[in-house]
Amino acid sequence: MAISATPAATAAPAATRRWRWLLSLAILAAIWQVAALLADSAVLPSPAAVAAAAWQHLVDGDLLRDVAITLARVVVAFVFAMVIGSVIGLALGRSRLLDELFDGWLVIGLNMPALVTIVLCYVWFGLNEAAAVLAVAINKAPLVVAITREGARTLDRPLLEMAQLFQVPRGRVLRRIVLPQLAPSLMAAARSGLALTWKIVLVVELLGRPNGVGFQIRSFFNFFDIAGILAYTLVFIAVILAIEAFILQPLDRAAGRWRAP
Image 1 (cartoon, one colour):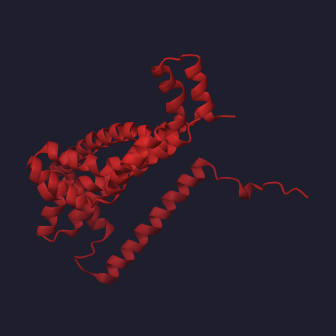
Image 2 (cartoon, helix red, strand yellow):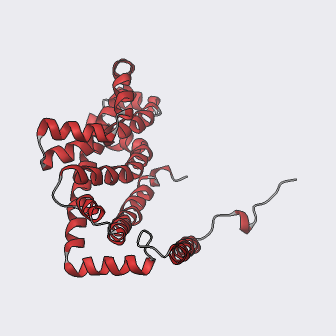
């Protein structure tokens, strides 16, 4: 006997999911508040104390400035890594020879500690903006290559052969056949890589830049200002979540429309 899907088994509406997400955050904030009251220490400031610190830095102007500087570094490094990694990943996924030649390089890149890459870039190129962005892009690119390569391996070969048979221009093949099929892999690389990118940017700033969120976190650490550390961290996490919700998720939905039944 066939079993029909019940309303409980279906996915919850978007509004319900948002309310559940907000409820989850409220529970987390409540747990944090209770823990802060029990600890009664500057090491664990309450949510209200962190919010007050964030507001004070916002009024002073340094919070927006540092967040903007860090976000600019994240965007530049992210774009470089996505473009370069996508091209290399597509090449490796479409050519068995290239894949066999450079698979070892990719494994090394995926396992290279970010700290080592950052230090080497600063030593080789100096404590400047170019070295900082390059270090972040180098760390993120292997992840993009790996994900894009797997997507390229699943491209519809008969469709590509048909396009070649009818001598469809390469640009049109790329736009109409390759990119739509690669879209899920590219979006997976973008969404997973965004979190990785901004974390590495903070390390880059902490080690060798005179501004940005990472630099300020180091300054707060020197003065044992835990509220400042958490304020800057939570504000930047909120910015990244906004990018995910209002840019990457809509792009992901748009990229998947070609698969509509």
